[in-house]
Figure 1 (cartoon, rainbow, N blue to C red):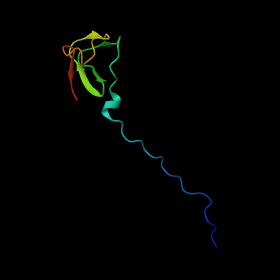
Figure 2 (figure 1 turned 120 degrees about the horizontal axis):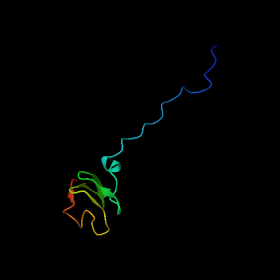
Figure 3 (figure 1 turned 30 degrees about the vertical axis):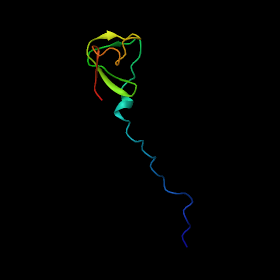
Length: 72
């Protein structure tokens, strides 16, 4: 008679689902030097920087459309 195995065969760990594109784009933050073309999220929406600048409280992507273009 053959003895029964004492442990289960190793299993592969569950793979993580791919991160969403939004998760890889940083949130807009005050005091950051943004380059032209930099992408950020603000209030759940994606934006691309149109002109290099250092962000200020009153220059959010919503408040300063001359600096940001909505991309999503």
